[in-house]
Amino acid sequence: MSTEFRPPNLALSTVGLSLATFMQVLDTTIANVSLPTIAGNLGVSSNQSTWVITSFAVSNAIALPLTGFLTRRFGETKLFVWATLLFSLASFLCGIAQSMSMLILFRAIQGAVAGPMYPITQSLLISIYPPAKRGMALALLAMVTVVAPIAGPILGGWITDNYTWPWIFFINVPIGIFASFVVANQMKGRPEVTEKPKVDYVGLITLIIGVGALQVVLDKGNDEDWFSSTFIVITAIVAAIGLIVFLIWELTDKDPIVNLKLFRHRNFAMGTLCLVLAYAAFFAIGLLVPQWLQRNVGYTSTWAGFAAAPLGILPVILTPFVGRYAHKFDLRILASGAFIVMGATCFMRADFFLDIDFYSVAMVQLIQGLGVALFFMPVLSILLSDLQPREIAAGSGLATFLRTLGGSFAASLTTFLWDHRAIVHHERLAEHITPFDPTAQQALTQIGHGDPQYAAAAMNQMITQQGYQISFNEVFHLLGYVFVALIFVVWLAKPPFAAKAGPAASGH
Image 1 (cartoon, rainbow, N blue to C red):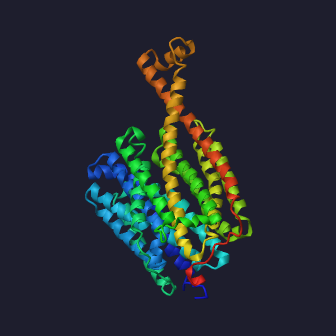
Image 2: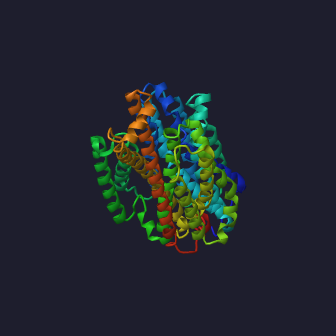
Image 3: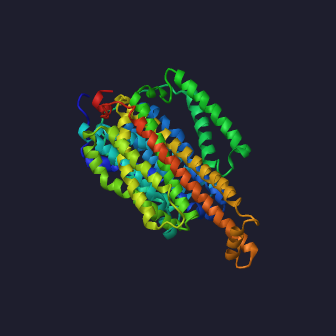
């Protein structure tokens, strides 16, 4: 096993791996816009329908850190092929579900089998590409990571409007079967050494309880008004106990199910920290901008999607160049450039106002795309660079798990901050509207045309909108400073940053 394995057709192998990953990442967002239709068809409330998203997120978050253990047990190729086939089967079952409880169960299965797909894609791409072209492989994967979540809501909305909601799941079936057949065929001769590690049952059970409960808290917190809800309080306590026991056990067990000792590698630790915080801020932007456009500026969901979509243009155009030439630069410089651009676009949004035009919103999204194009590939290369070849699948799974959790934290925190600060600003602005202020009284008279009730309601609506706008600007100031801080964090990593080969290359 001294020579590196190369599949018969590298391009076809890349297509198979990328298609499966695109399908899996797309499925994290494709159902979001279809929830009202699904809820109506299956006869449940819109609040109950959000479990379609939560069940996928919970089981996916639990499965991701198990990638290293599963890879050791079954081998990367076999695990990828079976996960992709099972994902296709679970997608079909989601499409034929006749009740909400069935759909939630099948979505949970879909999320669980999707867990290892992205990390193994990363590991396989690194192992089959020659060293000089590994940057290109990671850049391609980064493009998939960016474009798929943007395409999800647009594609999901179009399918739901023009066909029926089950087709958002049925489209996965032929793609998954094709991708698994291609990868199985191309990787047939790839040497892999499997082992039979003992199952760390304490680690597994505490992971399921801790991460599962935490993901439920993050997904449901805003809906349940956080800690004023007994359900959220109990779930948060369960999550805290589960995660504390999990961390203590995994750090002291001889053969842990999740290898937390990977953080002994400096570049893995610093790269993962950058990935988690930058992705969390990026995820928050992707969540807030469309919501703000619909809630405050009066856009429809379709037009909000169009305004946000330019974000994907530059990553698609620049990916081949970043992949080809990135290795000629210090990757910390590229990552710093990404954080400068993304921070600058946050500060631009901190100056947005209610009457802003479509062009201005779309242009800031387009500029942010430059930052996104320079972000994923350098940060992924840095965090994988000092792992041993046999550790890459486990490291990728752990980093992707923490990145996903970071996105969940960001979604909950930014939504909470936006709403909370809007209430504070509403109160401050409303203080100035009193019967003793002649300017306020004159404004109320003009707005109401002699109808005091209408005037009060209209004024309250204006104050609410302005409160949300000021809050929106504050949140983006905060996100801008997060990106500025990350410029310093990424320089704590040390060269060299060349990702190592896979198991075939190393004899593991």
